[in-house]
Length: 329
Image (cartoon, rainbow, N blue to C red; front, top):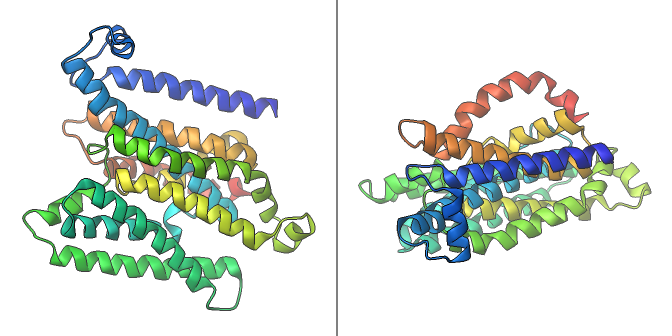
């Protein structure tokens, strides 16, 4: 286990360095001395403190949390379903959260309402997929996938209804922008509210990562080794869904991180989930922070983060697609 520890420690160091670099960069430059002065309370006030505490720090922390949540959820789903092409939205979570957020923008009058409804309907979509899978006999994993397809389609249709009924001059543009994903609306309060949910889900997935390895051998073999596959899947789905929905509620729908990052982790350290899940979480945080830096620092206009990750994720996935199943094995 020495090599995996070195790898994970190295990528954590990269993440910390990238975070420090990101917090100093922007339209308004902030030096490390100024940041240290704000932390110590040495009278560093005004624009620097406002930019640091109200804009840049929440955005950087949010990017790290969302990237880690989506990547770890994707790795857990792929391992649980024994399918390297599964993404965190497989159970309809993203569609449910999108519908909840759109509904909140139409009937609510605050951003908090949007986040609460996005979280609630995201969890509802996953619960609906699980319930649908129990209505039919057959392979439990296949039934879960089919239940996810049904749930996702249902909430996608409901989202279309809300968009059709929304005010085209005010509500519809806001819904469309949110669905593209982004961190411009994130605050320290929303980060503090979702951090316990995301960290709890990550901790559960990491603790169960060794048992997830046994699922790849088949349910019968896993039972002989003392694992209850049905119970394990429910717990992993709950943890992965919790982290995924919590991240979507504050950052909108940001694709490709949950699908691509586990493949990068497998190329670096192999398919062992005890290493893959924590490694994917750190790499996901790095990738999303890089995408956010690119979007806000180096492009002529700030693209929504979901567009940025898609533009760079699609060609990368096309490059590694032929090795995806080999890496999973």
